[in-house]
Length: 265
Image 1: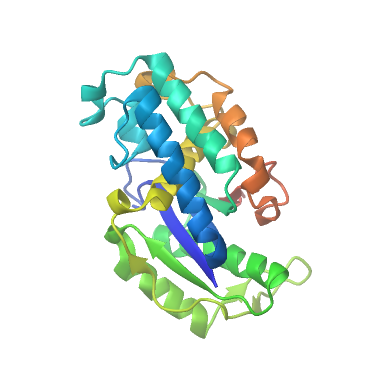
Image 2: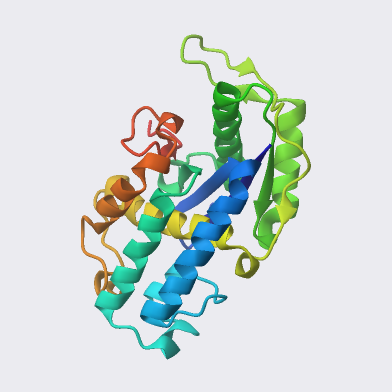
């Protein structure tokens, strides 16, 4: 059994939206590795408390932390301390027994007005989890745990994928049918404030968002509040740190396995 934790960056609106990207990150592990992973994270959080006075039970929400929103502004970190803490979190990720898949939906490339951004992004992400588990564990199954906001819509998509699921073929013009077989249960809700794993998925998703702005949007600049902390190239360094746990097979055309849709015509 594999446990999948999902979180996202950006909004899933279309054709009206506030972010050009909707990014879905899946962090997953075999259930036998859950305990040791949790203990590594908890030990890290206790050290973070000792070294930086970051409360062990405080939710680490990356966007709020970097942009100094409440409650993080009360901790009064300098820009360099925030950067150091972020890099420490990525160092932690690199030693966990996990795998990570990132799917980027680029709304600038969408041409169909009724395109369902969440449905498509989740579909692409879940398919890659299914493919990976099939390749490493023929009898393995997985379940999804995610933040509470989008569970009903995600349930609709995952139920549909288990009944009929068509995948584009690299070799034929017609897609082929391949229903999801390894997913059990509907996506289960859990507050991100109660899950270190969802918080880590949020963190990766946020950095992938920064990466996508430069990689997929003609080097679009980041907000000034982020540029106070991170410079161009830091997102690459962070992704390189966690490269050992990224599922690089999720995309053969990206160095970090990041799946980018729709394809530009």
